[in-house]
Image (cartoon, rainbow, N blue to C red; front, side, top):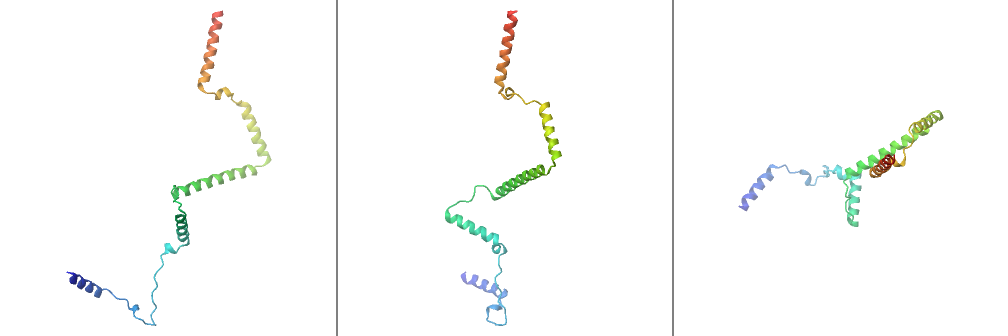
Length: 144
């Protein structure tokens, strides 16, 4: 059985082309092994080096996936850009526009007076105050 397998392999080997470069011929150029473009890339090498260093230190991989970290970083950068643009827009306004904005804000404050602290109080305090008013009104009506 083993001899049959050996014969089949020998037949297959005879069909396959054997490279002639194995024989020493100074005129032929020996082929070089092709580089893997992923492994040859600088970013891949740096990432691999960083992973090895983290592994040696005993640091685990971050709990957040890389995509999530990148998206958060982009959002943060977009918010910072937006704030900078708003500040630039405010800075670039001419004095006339700034004065008009101030007057508009003053008019809005005069039209809408600031709400009292009672309005911000919890609802049960408001209800209690209403009950007191009702109780005082009914006691006054009895007195009349």
